[in-house]
Length: 362
Image (cartoon, rainbow, N blue to C red; front, side):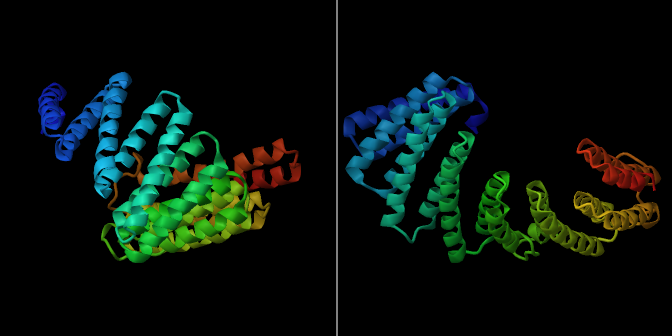
């Protein structure tokens, strides 16, 4: 309850730290020094939140020194993991101070300590979880430093650890963690323009997120699979792999329609079922397949025009009456054709620009 009152919490921490310091000096016990280290770590966190980085680092360094001394005496896994956590905190502070070499060294050391914990107790999932998290932190650090190859190395390590954890315990949290790491690796290769390397990771993501899950009520939402396929569809679009994007978009359409059929009174579900046709139109235009673009446009227009009749009890949607909302969506369709026509014109593809313009008019 003290965390909401910084002044009072600092006073309490100061008293507790003084008592722990005296106990540690008097008895030299690891228990007293652990308590002192925890109080100093909390002081460091408070200073960091106040952007007083000098005091924050001073507190954390003292906590770190205590944990080092304790671990040298006890060699316990608990103290080993406390030391690894301190390295993560010091890494974050070094990065904030633009000491990137120091930040990376601390991250590397925390990984090495976690590896030692896993080697000593391979049956404890918590140590593997920490190792996966620290590998992810290193990957994100390398990504921020534009060291993409090294970032992928650590993302792959984190992914492999998460795969192992998921095999042992296929629970929802483990599945979500694994799917996020797979998507991140897919995105990394996609951003580099390497769809062939990205796609296997997106496939794994779809295996984990692209079908209805029954383990929790929240994740049994019929929209989740469509969201996953739509995520991969957008990635394929960014990479310029339009055939794959089309294949994925068609699956999105199927899943969105199924979701609406499960929730026939949900106008948002219906709107999402409509919207996926805009994606198909965009893909068809990129492929210069004007016949398909026109067909998808007709389907989209037909579905949009049905909104007022399908939802007579809904007074407004996104701040508009349903007829006005339907009109705004029709204008969006025309805008999609117009924007592609402009892009064709800029590329001096005048015949294609004319075709796109004609579709906008129709």
